Each structure stands twice: as structure tokens, then as C-alpha cells.
Image 1 (tube, rainbow, N blue to C red):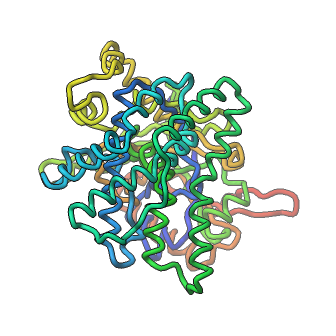
Image 2: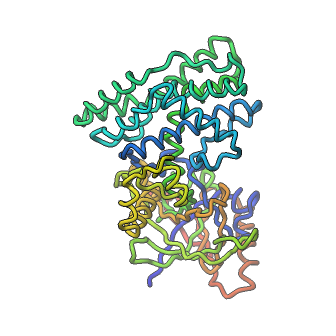
Image 3: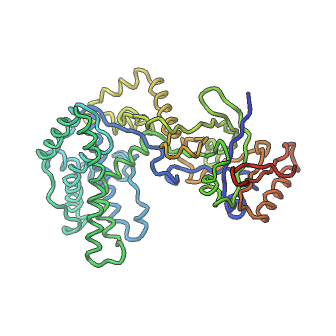
Length: 471
């Protein structure tokens, strides 16, 4: 097994002064919500399913809309800014029988009293799958009648006053079915479908912008809490719902540790090493032949025993980021892989009267292949980026958070024997260089690790390169 080297760019604030990563021999992984690329982790999710699946999706939408309305009633401070849709929410997970009765009443109002019970069948009859933006367009057409059902039930239960959050005139079932018929008609034309996706992508943002203009015209100096609540309930909810279910229900949360193949790109130093004031740590890794680029052993939390965490060695593969392939295509209804089997069966794959979706047999017929496909999607999703990032030549470690117990800054530790060297930037000050050298000198006194080599970056007028120090 051969050896290779990867580079980990860090600002000195992280290595030394604030987080003491070097002294603690820590590597900090980031979660997708903290990435500098908000598009990273994107999947080309599509929705194609039978009437059972579509009915359960709409019920899930109503459930989360009911939860959002309740949140708007409860929050009266800036804590509302941290509100997030709860994709894992199900009827069975609601805290009280009264809450479940409220939800049942909302579904009764929407599907039967307002007449939208025909919509799942129409969605199941579409000739082509819906993708994110076209689904968002459909949900936007259904949103006001859904919101009206939620608010009417809350008023009937004396939970909200009569005049709070009045819903404008909303689409009737025939109008929505006409929209679905029109959608079906354009699905055979690729150009028309792309135009529809493009148009649908602006629906939520235009509505939100209209509310911002309204707030501005009233002379407001800042965006007040009641306006934020209106934007959530009346404008942004369909888009946020689609995004959150894609991000949360298919795969577990995950964290990544980023390295680079080389350290000779000035923009990498500027972006990730405090404008050349930081350093690049050089790690020895084991070359692989199973599809991974290399391998790095680290130590971290691997599970729990009661309330106590279990720490052990993690043999982590490193993968070269793919800047050429398109995002993986994923069938939403088939790959709800982040849900427990009982939840999947009761909340998504069957109805209350016992009707079951054929997709269950399709999965169970070859469950091993289904699981392999799920993890292939995961690996592709977590190691694919837009070509505009190709200059980074990134190598990354990806660790799934299977227990959903890690915070945004997941930490693992490394052995000093894995650290081959430290490269100082063009602007790294003498004090920081000395502190790095002191920490590594003290850390190496107790072990048999090979000496850590030191380098610096130089520009000689023609090339930006790494030069070894102490020769």
C-alpha cells in the first residue's frame, strides 16, 4: 500500500489561539449548513409515485404547515429566526391526542370539505416525474387552501382569534386540477419542462419580495417579527418544505473534512488560511484501490453506551471531489432512507384504512440492492461539486451522522505520526511560526513519531511554490 500527502489549510486562529486544534491534535468537520457553497450536497430529486404516496406527501405538508402556524403563535421574540421545518414529523410523533385531533380535522377540511381529495390521483397520473421546482409550483397552487384549512381549524378550536392571518381568496380544486392537466401536457416537451422549472423557481422569492416591499412602504426601519411570520406562512413555506424534506429524509446528516491535493494555489491560501497568514498541515495517507482516493485513520465518537459516548478508531476513506458529473438523480418516494422502517410504513407507504403502496414490494424484493443504491447516491451527493470549484482540487473525508447526535462542529483526533509537515504562508508571522514549532516539539517528545518537516511558501517572481526550511 503506497503513501500520499494531502494538505489541510487552516487559519492560525483555529490552529492556535481560539480553538487550539494543533495542541489537541484535532480535525474539525463541518456540516452542510455551514459550507461556503450553499449548493453543495444537491441532489436531483424527483417525485413519481402512486396515489397512496402522493396523499401521504400532502398530509405531511399539512402536518408541517400546522406545526409552522403553531410556531408562529408561540414565538414572540428573535428565536423565530431559528425556526426550521421538521421533516421527520409524523402524526404518531405529535405530543398529545388533542394535537392529533387537530391534524385529523385539518386533513378532513382540506381533502373532503374543500374538495382536494382528487389531487393525489391526478398527481399519480402525471406522465413524467415532478422535480423540485415543479413540485414547489404544485404545492404553491395548493398552499392557500391548505393554509386556510389550518387556520380555520385553529380558529374553530379557539386557538387563534378570528382576524389573525386571514388568507386571501385561494384556488378551488378545479383550478388546481386544470394546472395539473396543463403540467401534464407540457411534460413531453423538454424545452417547455425546462421553462416551467425556471418559472417555478421564482414563485416563492417573488412572493417574499412583495412582502418586503410592503414592509418598506409602511415606513418600517427593520423587518418586524410579524412580517417574518407572514412571509413564512404566506410565501416561503412551499419552497422551504421541498428543500428540507430533500435534505433531511433521504440521507442522514453528514460532516466533511476537506483537504487539497496541492498547496500551490494562492487563492486557497487566501480563502482558507487567513489570506496567507495561516498554515497548511501535510498529512500522510494510505493509497487505496477500492474507488477511494486514499485513507486516513482518525479517532472519534462511534456510538453510545447508555448516556456515555464511545470513542474508537475510524478508518475513513478519502475521496477526490468530482467536478464533472451531474448531481445524482434520486426517487424521493423510493429512497426515504433516513426514516425508521415503522415510520416509513405508517406515515408514507400506507394509508389509515390499510391501503399499501406497491413501492413496498419493490423495495423488499431486493432490499440489499436498494441499500447499495442509497449509499451510492449518498457518496455521489457528498463528493460532487460544480465545475467552478475545480481549482480547489479537493480531497475529502465524509462521515455520516447516523445517530444524528453530532453538532455543527464535529471533531476527530489524529496521531502525530500522520503529520508529515507544516507549510507556513507568505504572511505567517514569526510568533505564530514559533508557537507551531513549540507545540509540535513538545508533542513529539513522548512518542516515536518521525520528525515533522517545516516549509514555507515563496514567490520568486515567476512561480508560487513550497520550500523546505531547516536544510
